[in-house]
Amino acid sequence: MIIYKTKNYTDMSRKAANIISAQVTMKPDCVLGLATGSSPLGTYEQLIDWYKKGDLDFAKVSSVNLDEYRGLSPEHEQSYRYFMNTNFFDHINIDKSRTFVPDGLASDVAKFCKDYDRLIEELGGVDLQLLGLGRNGHIGFNEPSYVFERDTHCVDLTPSTIHANKRFFNSEEDVPRQALTMGIKNIMMAKKIVVVVSGEDKAEALKEVVSGPITPMVPGSVLQLHPDVMIIADEAALSKM
Ligand code: GLP
Image 1: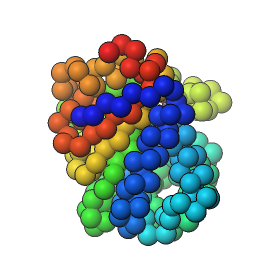
Image 2: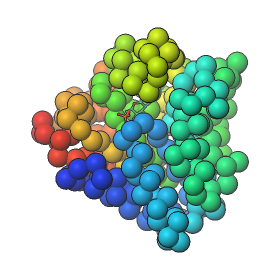
Image 3: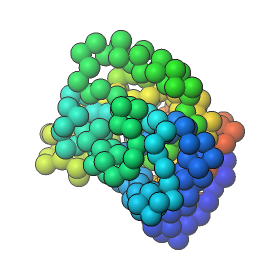
Image 4: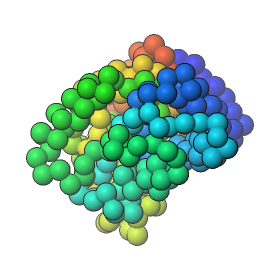
């Protein structure tokens, strides 16, 4: 596990974008595992900027997203599909038919989850997985639990996550109670993992992830077992270490 300390959110985003752009340049048909939330937003902005300057080409890239709220349509402004389209895909030359986000409206959830696992396999696995970190140590929507869920699954969101994510909705009642998420095995199978963490409110979780015991109660702690993880965190996020 490599920890790269940056001064602030902007530097963190530029560093992460640098690694993703190196990946896309070295393997133009790579598979990117992508994340939503405020943490990767600056990374996407930087990548869009470099794309517009002609430095990057996403034409052959495929992507699979970590998670999606259950019950939200792709058009819903708080759905992760909408987030990805408006904050990234609409601004680069990626082929949208090769961008995959879990279907929040899937009626047969068990089948959908199996199909999503198969899709990742058929794509040849994820070359680079970008991750944010939840305030309770979650990755994707793998919430603290007694076991590590391996595969894509439906999860009940914890009160702390519902509370943390209410800032994106009109009220806490509007936050969906469930989500579909890649499992820990899906994430750990990625060849390379880049985690972006910013702000003091993540400091405790980051400390647990990096130096606490490996436990499903802190899902991100499993990353200690991955052979190629880079955590890019700003000073505030690293303030407890
Ligand atoms: C959300 C997402 C995660 C994200 C995390 C942190 O609930 N499911 O993928 O990493 O919470 O979000 P943020 O980056 O906005 O703090």
